[in-house]
Length: 633
Ligand code: ADP
Image 1 (tube, protein in one colour):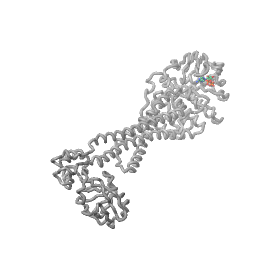
Image 2: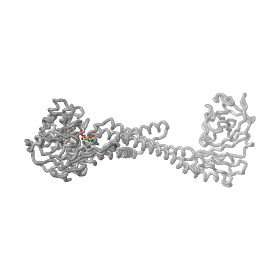
Image 3: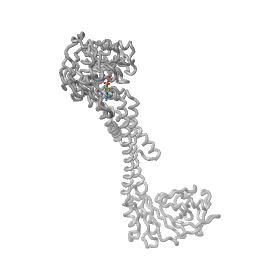
């Protein structure tokens, strides 16, 4: 029975550069079921082109191809893929196995693309491996097997698929004579089981084993030893129906098969997988760091506001004005306002000479009433003998002034002369956040002499509970002087909420810009690494297609691999990002802010980045033409 009928088939290549190549010219040829054919002839004669056409890896430029009486040439690619997975097996000089994966995976590959379930795939594969004497190698890594073993695995694949047509391109080209014999024995066995075997070969010994020899030269059949009676098949050969209908095979691969195949595939290419994961890790880690730090930085901005600006109110008035409250009462009047934590009045006295025994300086002294340390955020290094508020005859002196006056150790109670009066130094002002000049000046208690030379202004410094400053500011003037509140000017950070929002938005915008940049760089890196990976896998992808993978199957394989890499990279990036956030917040003494949403977000981000990076490669891979890429290896 005729299996294949070629009628007036030509194949013209039209390379991008250079003239057209007439690789096959008007070839007509019939192949019967169960034939064993050798195709011989000089290099460049058109043998591989013919084999590609027979295997539906390529379309004729003109002419007709009938497979079991049905038109098979120039069907659409997915129908051709289906016919290949169902009826055609390929054996290549370069073996084309799934490297670094168990041999059994390579054997069952076209059953996979036929939609056969895992258990049945494994049973068929083990049976086929047993038939070629390699049952024990089923779970062995294909890359560790010898050339002869590898080729027998390719033959086992043809057996497992129960192919009607086995196409072999120089199958013994890489083998020594012993292995050549073994492989030919196996091919004969496949042939006896009913398959038509077509071998392209340069070897006269191989050709001698064939029942029919077709010589091709310059794109034409120059001789054909076809006998009118084809060799009888002896083992279990039954006529089978060859169909191109969709019901012949599952339209979609099983999800479990796709997922398992993709996992095995990335696991078998650890270095490439690692390179791709690293790109995702960097993108996700940078995103997590910026997101995490922006939350921590926001919290820090709020805390800083609340700690300082948002808690400070200042009131000023001219001391010469008639007032219901004597000066000394102003702090306690202010403390009566709800929300006030501390209050102190500072009055500037006229600049005067301040001197020790050896040095004299012109200094502005201040008189202070109330809780200055809290209200003005002043740190005073008190003398060990001193307790409580300033007493008459005591002074605090700025540390910078003390140095200028060569004051000496305050534990020894040194004294200074101010406007002719002697004061004991009770402490050094070492920090003064609200009144920075104090470190070069002098503070006296309320009943200091010289009050008659008051400067015209008194300043009331108030600190409030967090966020209470605006409300305290609105009540403060009336509390100090209920009769003339307008005479008192009050300053509070009224616009702080807007300022806070602005600062936060500024921080956010910077961090988001960095994140986007990081994502773009990572995607660009991934496009590059994934395209390189696909390029390195051209032969494997060509082989998968030869065995029946449709464009969609290849696209999905690369996409699922990208998702795996995204998940792995996402988890890795989350870990690295978290570590970095902890390191930064600890070094800055911020409270780290972790949002649990960062965890799923990291994985999602990894998948998005990886898929975006892999999308182009996935399309490229799906479109690879098997005929050219199988030769690429
Ligand atoms: P053989 O297998 O007998 O060595 P081929 O079938 O490989 O011969 O090639 C037949 C002719 O077609 C050669 O001249 C070859 O250079 C040319 N050829 C093969 N493939 C292509 C291609 N993809 N594009 C252009 N020319 C090609």
